[in-house]
Image 1: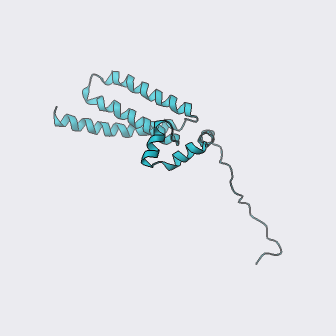
Image 2: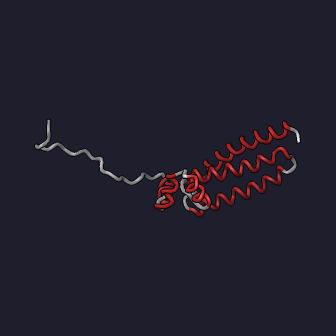
Image 3: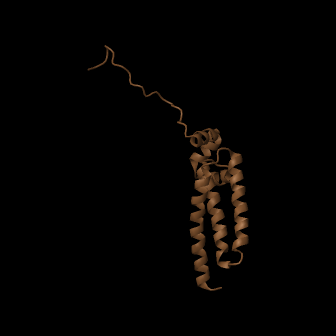
Amino acid sequence: MDIAFIVCSLLLFAFSVYIGFLIGNTVGVRAVTRADYWKMNGAAIVIAVLLSFILAAVPLFYSVDVGLLAGAIVGLKMAFGESVGPWAVHDKAFNVNRSHRETAEKGCGEERRRRRASREDAPDLISVEKKSRTSGSRK
């Protein structure tokens, strides 16, 4: 194999991982439930398989298909905002994405994603109303 082929293939792989991440991150915002998340992962795999049939004629583009799939899966996970499936083991083993792990443990992720999808405001946790001055207050 020629060194230029390998370098070009690696560059295409890196670029396609980035593009796949952007696609997965954009689409993953629509996932509200865990079932939606897994359906989107399945759709990404099916699309990658169909894309591999198209790209099979050009060996240089083999890495594009793999990179797009890898980036899309990671983008879906980051947009979903919760440690699910194998990602829970990964996040715990490497001690990363603590907010995603906490969301999975508390089970409040679906409610937050549902509010985000409907563009509803988050619930007020503290009162921010101004209190009126009474006669006992300082001036």
